[in-house]
Amino acid sequence: MERSLGAYARTMFAQRMWSGAVRQAFPQVADIVYAVVSVWISSTMLRNWPNSQGYWRHTDVWAYVLIALVYLPLAVRRRAPLTVLVSTAACTLCYFTLGYYHVVVVCGLGLAFYTVAARCPRRAVAKCAAGSLLVLLWGTRLAEPGLGPLSAVFVTVTVAVLWVTGDRARRLAERGERLAVLTEQLRLEQEEKAQRAVMAERMKMARELHDGLGSMLSGIKHSFSAMKNQLDLNESQQIKFHANIDKLNESIKELRNISHSMASDSLLKYGLDNSLRNYCNNMSQSGELNISFKALHTEKMKLREEQSFHIFRIVQELLQNIVKHAGPAHAIVQISYNAKKLYITVEDDGNGFEMNSTIRKNGMGLKSIESRIKILKGRMDYQTAPSKGTSVLIEISCKENR
Image 1 (spheres, one colour):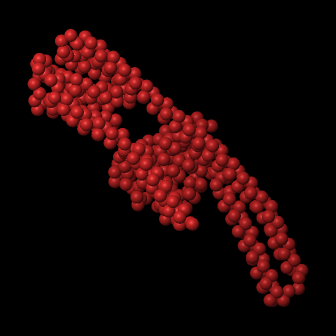
Image 2 (cartoon, one colour; image 1 turned 180 degrees about the vertical axis):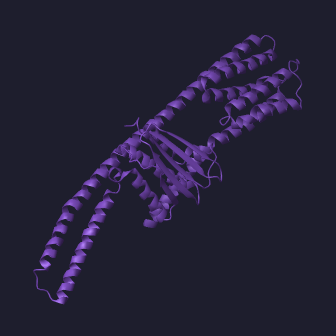
Image 3 (cartoon, one colour; image 1 turned 45 degrees about the horizontal axis):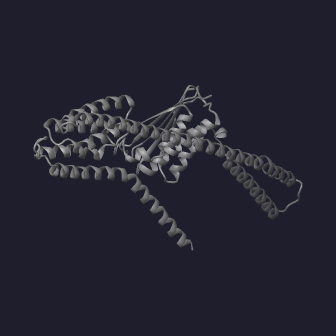
């Protein structure tokens, strides 16, 4: 039964990973397919479109080259929308100027402009709209006699519709990002409340053990110690008596260790410095990650419990990122405090990554870290490169957060 459940869990996990990879790769694959198919369809239309009246220039190899240069860059339109639009518009302008059949390249320029409208600031979109419209209006001179004014109206309306729909898509995407940030902040706040409740309960239980049962055992030990001189014990009985006293001392010591261990999660009790130092030492001793911890200040930090909790979680997530993504590495955690600013540096000599990589955008828990930093009204800067490790600097204004 357990094997069946384990196999089922592994199968479901693999399916989810596969479906996630497919969803992530689908837009790029769709753009590539669209670019290639568009080149084929446009070339076929250009070759087969009747030109008995001689309205357009005779099709030659340059016409096919320009069609390819118009459509193939669309395969990377999501990564570099402005660059793709400029390239597509320039090739389309050359195509129109040479006088080839004009209709077959309109869709390429239209899609490039829509991508800019959906992904770029409005000020840049306005300039791109004007440029795209001028290029398309230049192409209307190639329309059949009598259709020139109608073609001008058509391309103007087309640019306007692409602008509006692209802007709408951009605003929806921004709204979705804001909603994701708010959702993450709500999750963090709920996690914080739950953690604080658990910490408070653990502290209560630790106090009960230490003050209640611990005091009782200490009283029993003192009573036994006082009775020792009043009892007439032979040598064998004295050995047993002292052995029982030693066991009682060990029990009291163990009880105190348990109570301290239960309270160790409380950042208020031990402070942020000691909590981070203990966490780093535990990771190093377990072999999970080799960490050096340095506190570069002598002044006692004055932070609220929720501030300490968020900072602890930030460092914890950064170290877990190193374990997951950096490979074999040595990490250094440095913390500095001066009553106005708190500086935290977490660096490693591991694999590193590209700043615009998929790991940066979709992984590494950076959204959660950035949400916590936003709650603390701080900022985060980081430097990284493949095979050169990663360095993260976090600055938090303590005065502003009190």
